[in-house]
Structure formats: C-alpha cells, structure tokens
Image (cartoon, rainbow, N blue to C red; front, side, top):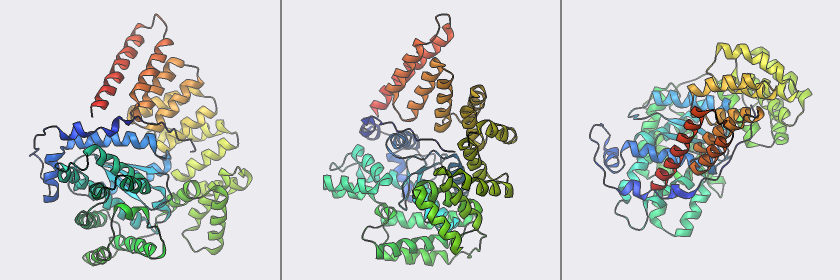
Length: 486
C-alpha cells in the first residue's frame, strides 16, 4: 500500500516540560524496581513518563519522516510484542514505529515508544540480529534509563529538563542534529544526556540478551551485530548513527561475546517475513526505484544474498514503483500464487491492481480476505484504499469506521477516512475527521479550527451534532491549554 505521509509542523509547546518535571512529586512505592530504576521512579512517576512520551511522539509525528506502511508496521509490531512478552519489569504497553532513515539506528524513549530506522533492517543479516537491537532498546525502557537522567540532573542548573528532553529527542531521531545542539551549547552536561552511560549500556546488553533468548531468537546475534558495527567504525570516518547514542568501547563487544556463552547457540531457519520486510525496506526506503531494481537483479544473478522469493519481491516492488507494470505483474502474480495468504504479497498485489486501473477488481479480491480477517490492518487499509480508488466511498467509510473502533489511534486509518469524507463531499464530517488527524500531532489549535469549520456545514435542525461539535471544540481548546502547561 502506497500513501504519501502527512507532515505537520508541531508548535513548540513541547519544549516547556520543566513545570511538569520540577513540581513536587510523591514517591511511588507500589512498584518493585531494580536498583537502577528506583530513584528514577521517585523523580518521574510512571504516569508522567507516559505523558511525556505521548507529547514526544506527537513531536516525532510532526517533524520526522515517520513511515506509514501497514505491512512493515505489522512485522515490526509482531517482533516487538514477542520480545516484550518475554521481557521483565514491563509496566506499560509498548508501541513500535518506523523512521525513514537509511542509517543503522533504533531508539526508545519515555512511555515505551520504540522507533526503528528503516536502515536497521536493511543492514541486518538475519532476524535475530534485528531483534537483538529491539531487545536492547526495550531494556532501556524497562530499566528506566532515560528517567534516571532526570534524577541525575535535578540539581544541575547548567541544563534545564526541557532542554534535556529536546536534546534527547533530536539525538535519538537524528543524531547529527543532536550533536549540532551540543556544539551550539558547548555544554558537557548536554552531551551526558544525549548518550547512554556505559553502565546503562551494559545493563541493556545483559537484559536485552536475556529477553532475546527468552523470545526464541539466537542470543549470539547481539555480539554478531555489535561486531558488525565495530567493523564499520574501523573503515568509516563517520560512525553509524546507533553509536552516537550507544557508546561502543572495545570492552563492550568482548563483554557481550562472553555473556552470550551462557546460552546455547540457536540455529534458526531463515525467516521469510524478515527477508520480505528487508527487501521492502530496501526497495521503498533505502534506494531509489531504479537503483533498487539494479541491486535486486544483481543479487538474483549472484544468488548470494537471501532466498529468491524475497529478492523477487524486492524486484517486483522496484518495477511497480517505476510503473513498469508489464514486468512487475508476472513476478508479483507468481509470488501471490505461491503463498496467497502472505500479507506482503497481498499488499503489493493490491498496489498492482490499482496501478493497472483495476481498483474495482482489488475491492472484489480483498472483500473475502477482509471477511476472514476483519481486524488485520494490512487487509483492512488496503481494502479501504482500493474502495476509495474505485469510488466505492460507502464501502470505505463502513470498514474504516469499524477499524477505527478497534484501533482509534491509528493515524493512517484516520487519514483514509478523512479522504473518504472529502470524496463524498461530506464537509462537516471531513473537517471533524481532519481535526482528529491534527490531534495526533498535538496541533490542538488547528484541530479546533477544523471543528469550527465543521460547525459551518451542520444543518440548523441537527441540534445533537451541533452540541457534540461544540463540546469537541471546548475539549480541544482545553487540551491546548493543558499541553501549554506541560
């Protein structure tokens, strides 16, 4: 499924967190925490950590290239949940998302949000290596390493809490930007907040490896991946982005290698879904379509990368994105025939039908799949998108409303239903839905403006709708005030 990302500039209220953090807090004693986490809990209770995480997520959505790709989202969430289910000290739900960036990097921040660069999966050799980085980031959250920074900085007048959080956000998403902040401020205190300490890294390595093993992955993949990063340092002037916030002294690599020896080495079969996700990331986010086509043709000739199906899948995407439909069609059709329930193939086959101006055929193809798996985001969102392209707006509206009842915060689902209302010329519903999209970015003033526009299209006799929208208008204005107070 291909949709253009919506980027909205978020206002700067996020930068004023000092009131939230510096007010007197009551110690939370009902949680059993490891030693490294206890003081952090006193400085930053869990409910406030989640509140900060929510606002930071709004900032990321508004200012960073967050990827809206249902297939990759489904894969990432599946791996992430498998790891979280095997982790210790999990205190709140985790969420996982992609950043369109070719660098090797992943990051975690307050409230269980874990961001993954597309470059990470593109440059991982196997699924266990990819999962090892996620397990490491999950450990940073469960051990509350970021929260501990607030405890360490409470008495440090050289760096405000607001500046610290802004620096962390800039660095984990775009490390070069974070280093620019350090250069501008010339503050060692700022630098200390932009990188995990060695003790935190050691703890995340230890706990992350245990989580990796508990989840059924190969624990030796952690040392393999760090060894790969260490090799990149030797041959590149600029280190991988991951190492700007995760220091890698020589001792760390050897420590991880020794720690892995307490586990049995796992010889796992090649993961088709990992390889398909890797091919998709390479074709859609790592290379331009022509370069991706050349790469996959080369790898197919050499047959030296990973399984042929995944290589053909990447080739099919690169051809599809170049509108070479006659070449893409036989490749994608053959893949779907070989595995008709595969979500990667279903998604791309739908793209092919729409590109061939056969949107109505796509709707007919997806309808029974949706009936069998009504809550699957890949099938549902492709079905809705195909219905919109086929001008079957009533179908799109019905399935999206049902989907959003199940997943009320799904940003792509909200964008699609907004498009549906606009195509229907239902302007009251369009502006109300558009307001809901703005809320995802924390742009409550813009959301309030959209609700005001919606009121202009409500008929005088629709009193209930008027009252509901007026209540929503009041709510958004109040939320703006609450956000400004953070």
